Length: 113
Length: 110
Image (cartoon, each protein chain N blue to C red):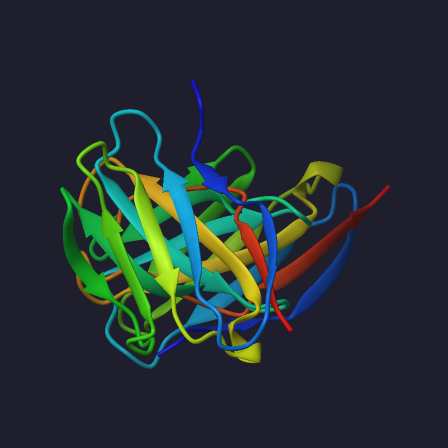
């Protein structure tokens, strides 16, 4: 069975640009979460979606937004990119809408110049 | 608020034991442990729930002290495959995502 897939794997943007990151959860998983991992740090929670509804949001500015589609895939959008947005963006899927076992994708590495 | 992990790094020889600690200043509902190898996705190890029992995963086990808001991960008779960065993630309430610590890097040498 396919695991969590994310695209693109790597991308380079310049300050002020916009980026869209995509995630396909494991088949049958209805919950998708997004985390930001800065080099040398633990992942930081950005959003959790379940059945297309936002269930939780971390301490990130409104420049960050996300949505979940009817097929449970998800997009993370970041507007007006800053240098500090450079990080590995991890998507995780889970069966339930509570904070159970998370299955992480390999991430999208964003570099902002 | 992020949990605090200690130590930051540990180096072991195969067969040695290690303990990784995770503490929080907030009341916790659950503690989760993940391991991430360099360049790979974090992989789930176990969940400890408030009021639950000590969990085990092969020779890796963990405990959750609710009164102290602390969890410890025990690596017993370490193997080369145990190398990686271990993260504890905590949640206060269901459905609000995890707060991860900064990680503990474990290096197991032959």
